[in-house]
Amino acid sequence: MTKTILILLSGATVTNDTLVLAFATSVTDAQQLFKVEIGAGAVKDLAGNKNTAGTTYVDNRAVATALELTAIAATGHADGITTGKIGVDNADKNVITVNFGANKMTDSAITAGNYTLDGGALPATSQVYFDQKSDGTTDTIVKIVLPKETYTVASIGTLTLSKSIVNVDGTKYVAVAATDAQVNVPVQLSDNTKPILTGAKYVAAEGDTTTNTFQLTFSEGLAAITADTADNMNDFVVIIGGAEYAVTHLSTVTDGDTKVTVQIATAVNVAQAVDVQVVPVGAKNAAIATKDTAKLADGTTGDGNLLTESTKVAVSGTVAP
Image 1 (cartoon, rainbow, N blue to C red):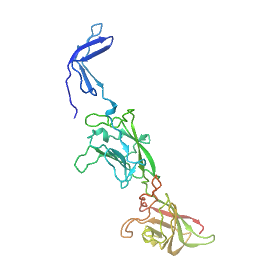
Image 2: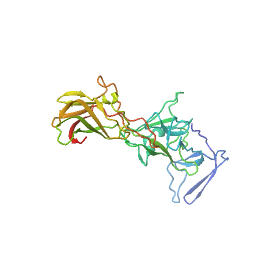
Image 3: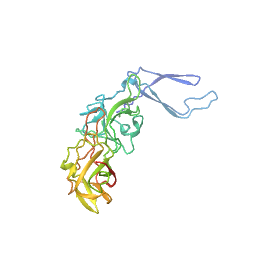
Image 4: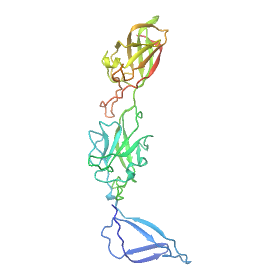
């Protein structure tokens, strides 16, 4: 809480356009924010015109009262966020935690405009809010939730905190003490975009008129899949004339492949109208198993993003087996 102390003056002198006020007693704490109120008519110019009432401030607080927050590790990625740290928890993809420790913060700490990411504003629809701790306090930990479908490649981003962020005592909290500079910290940004089935072709040799094999193409590289894994085969269905045909074979997928070959039991004419669809979760598919590689910026493997449900593409064109 900000404390208010009235300080008596021993005198005032005027030199040209400068008013100098002298304290009647020494100020024990020189690091103060002084509020100076001048009543109407207290000062007049050489022509006799009196001043109107006014208020000004003298900020004598040293920048050493500020505290710099640092990322928990150089990668900005951590198993947990400790007191006075900024980072992304492994379990929380693209949810940045800013822990101000025991300092109760003003709403400046949850103002999106007080944070920038890689030199620009936070992505549209980002959420910035106080997170409730186990002891019930809600004004010391800030969560910044970046929107889904924003990043397709993992990277290290730079989060910048504005010097306008202050605690309830009015202390500028995030300036670097030695230079009064803004704080920049690295944060791990993960791939949070779902892969999409984007195309399908018949797999047939030149001159073949029928085939039961199709090559599927995806918007991103997929995580490794062992051939004929049931959970992955259940993610796809081939539709011919409104009838659905289950996938009976799915090729091995090497980590990062964007193409997958699937087969059905029935051969079809390559001139037929055929669709391939991603089966949504339900009675015909217990869960989506196919996902992207989602490599983290440090090269390690993170949790992949599951394939976009219900996407349907028409089989178009032919590729040689």
